[in-house]
Amino acid sequence: MLSDADLERYARQVIMPDMGEAGQEALLAARVLIVGVGGLGAPVLLYLASAGIGSITIIDDDIVSRSDLNRQIIYQTEDISSQKVKQAAAAATKLNPDITVSTLPDRATIGNIRKLVAAHDIIVDCSDNVETRYLLGDTAHWEKTPLVFGGAVRTEGQVAVFQSGVVGFEDSPCFRCVFPAMPDSSQAPGCSEAGILGPVTGVIGSMQALEVVKLITGIGSVLIGRLMLFDGYNGSIMEIATKKQPKCLCCSAK
Picture 1 (cartoon, rainbow, N blue to C red):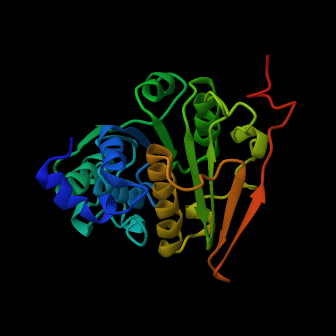
Picture 2 (cartoon, rainbow, N blue to C red):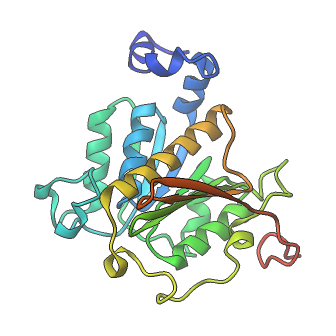
């Protein structure tokens, strides 16, 4: 049951007919894992904290660099050389002191990811390398956990939701159905090689946060079986329909 303070804090959400108190209670009871608190993870964390996600875990082994500050708006100049998870958690709990933000100054690896995912309801992929993305995609399927994927570089971004391991969604695509072959660094350059405009990560991170809220509360239509493509140069958004692949190495493997 929501307290008077909760009803005041989340009044603009609770007043929505398809959200109501039940939706807010679901948000407060949710456990979300955010992998990476950089350009995408920063807005995701802030918006999920402000929405009232009750328990958030952030994992990132990086420190704040001056070159991060054009887009990673959760950090300040005085945070340079500090652990990202420490500063990000402080900012999120300052915004909403009624939630719990747990930190792991580590990298998601094959040795720790399954245990981490098993303790959460949703994974948000805000990572910055292809190896981690494929690890999260495979783990999400095998641990039967929804995955909210986002990627951004230059002025472009992508968002999708994968639930192939979740009961009732077995016929939906997994991450590898959409991205079957892991690209090398020349095919998938990161922000340090290709560049990035800060507002692009804000758009994509905000979309990821919205998909998380929709998954938890059951409102709206989630981006399952759809890959959303954002073009910041032209101010356009398009969708590509995605399908489960019968020979997928992850979700179709026996």
